[in-house]
Image 1 (tube, helix red, strand yellow):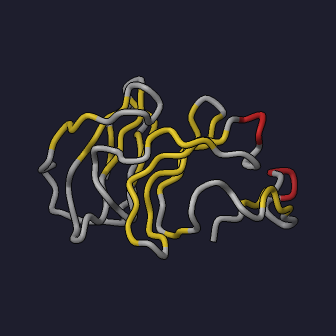
Image 2 (image 1 turned 60 degrees about the vertical axis):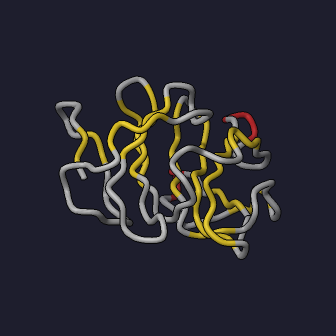
Length: 142
C-alpha cells in the first residue's frame, strides 16, 4: 500500500483520516520511518517490485500528503526492516534485511540524501527487525 493516514494524539488513535490514497513512493511494507525536524522520512522496504533502498520525505507542511524523493539508491543497499534513529547530529540506520540478516550501521549527516558506512559488522550478531533507540545517556541501543 502507499496510502497515508493520520490520527490526532488528542484521541490516542481512535479516529483516522486519509491524507493521501496514492503517495509518490511505490506501495510497500517493512519500511523504516523516522521524524526529523518535523519532516517524516521513509526508508526502503519491500514493494511488489522487490526490496527498495530509496529515501522519501514529507515536509511538515505537507502532513504526509506530498512526498519527495531524497535518494533513489542509498548506499546501504536494498533492504526491508531497516531501523532508524536520529542521533549524533544526523540519521543512524541499521540496514535490516539485505537478502539475509545484517549488522551494518550507516550514518547520514544530510537528512537522508547520502549515507556513510560506520561499520559493516557491528559487535552484535546479524539481525533484522530490531529495536533501535537512543538511551537517556545518548548511546545507541540495539
